[in-house]
Length: 253
Image 1: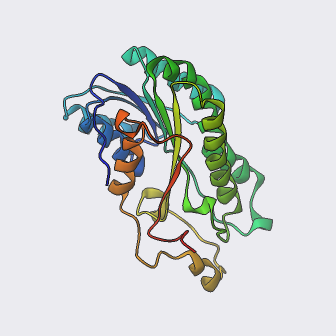
Image 2: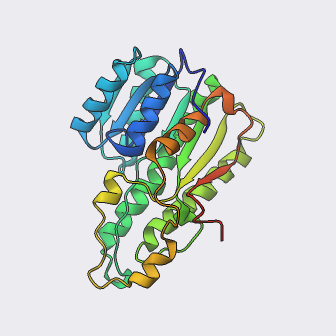
């Protein structure tokens, strides 16, 4: 597994940083020497992540915000650039998943899923591009194996992750001749807060749901975190427009 290196003196913004993959990614970047700006709705979790990062001898700043609001995305980038005087990396890790029979999904849940999983990365990237161009920086979007295989009861989630994957490729083409890189990581199932808190419909079809069960087990959060962090480092300069599946074979078929 590639390991993040060569980030001393650089600054990164990581969303979803209060726990799980976001926290793991932030810590991997900190171990590589980066100062890290942490964004999440969970202020207490952010404080815990920041404490762990500072113990590694680098700086950490936090911003508790709901990224479903575009203005919060713009503010997060502005605060990160102000805190560290630069921005070299953006890792869009935050995400939500809501299970439902499609006819029963409330409009509010659909809109929330789109806002957090697809619109927030767009608005964060839009605000970060000037800083990243100046720093020859990079973006990594965390999508999902659900971008490539249909999964029952999560039509909104699948749609947003497929959209985010393709948006990554579109941005890579748009900035083909500029000093900025765009890549994506598509994990399979991981044991995160999202996974532990998922609520399936009471009458879900086990056979259909089980079609995407990971035959080799769940992906380790730390593996995905290291890969996500690695892709924004100078060591990953050859990656641009890639989406790397790390799902223990879910999308092999």
